[in-house]
Length: 71
Image 1: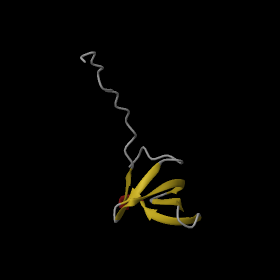
Image 2: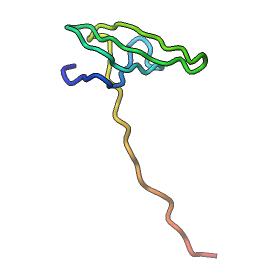
Image 3: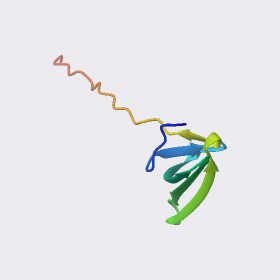
């Protein structure tokens, strides 16, 4: 994962329900943090580069309903 940068959002492969934010990268270690919504507690963790996946970039889909003038 060569294109990983500080500030990127990632998932740990064992639990993809928690998004982590990259704070620091050293060798093959990635220092991350996340915020627990229920308790507003900040949690920090160190992951190996091989155990994480980068979050997909949000995509914008435009396709509103067409308006019909039939009565």
